[in-house]
Length: 403
Image (cartoon, rainbow, N blue to C red; front, side, top):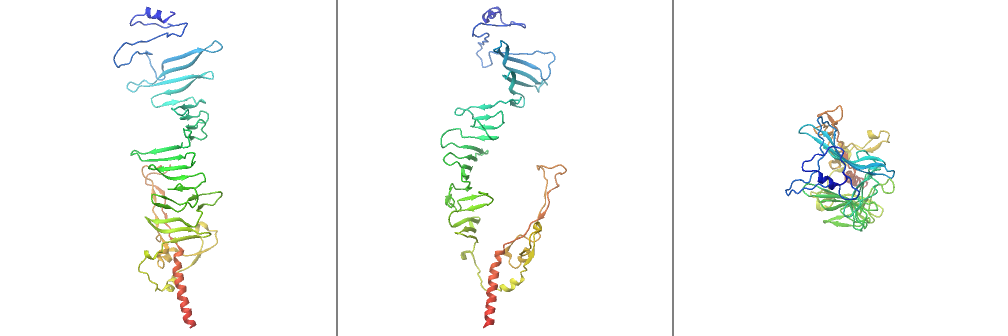
């Protein structure tokens, strides 16, 4: 047969054509048209490729469509194909796969497949990029075949994940947004070209940023050290935190005298680190309005004589020169406010429980972290009032003796 119209004239309804039939044409008209005049919502027209095997088996190919043409050497080449395969022919649990292939470098290569568990692109690991274009970006999503790097808005990703603002204006940002099931959001993003800051938000509000000068700004957008800001009524005393800035120093700073770090219990300030021109003050609350039962008459000398200064080295620093100090529990009954923690306190051991990642040789109920000491601490500055009062008492006795 030489024309599709001739075929249509020869075939009647329900006709069967055996193998070897070719429909050819010398022009670009349609060689075969399937027409359905059915008016319902079901499929039509239908093209069915049916492999009626008497002994089907897993991995059987059940259909193939080749797209074939010639090369410049007058050879026939399949430039693309679609294949279907039986993955599992178990009755009631059948699975099928469909493969899409194209010619690359003289070899027909699989580009993506559909199977029962996934949609797989580039199963053969060829050097081929994957690109999704949106209405305003040619590389809205891009996987670089040569490196495996992923670009969002970027055509040349230099890291495993490279995010670039999709627009070209100064207000564009490259941001990752997080949202939970109730709609609360948070984000991490590179700010627009006006700020170039890395910005962290929570519940829709900015909480922290790292500007280009390396500062760490919390609840403020001030980039100049010492610049004060007010956010939701809270005064930001320090304009910046700098860590490992230009060397090994860890710096917390401002450019003028004043508060550097406010230490609070609830909403009440109980301590403050502040700086002057060339000095630092570590202050604890001492305002008279916070105190009661103030007494200036007590025996400091007797209490001071109970203190037992000692020389020692720390076990973890055995080679260090002996240092002067106190044993915490020996001070606790004399100046209790100088001591934190309890004598002989221990941190309880931690056991493996269901849900833990349990290493080989361990099981639920075994010790994960052994019990260890919960060490006491001392603030030796709390001894200063006792020392001053003792000196005053001794000075009074010396004066009386001299008289």
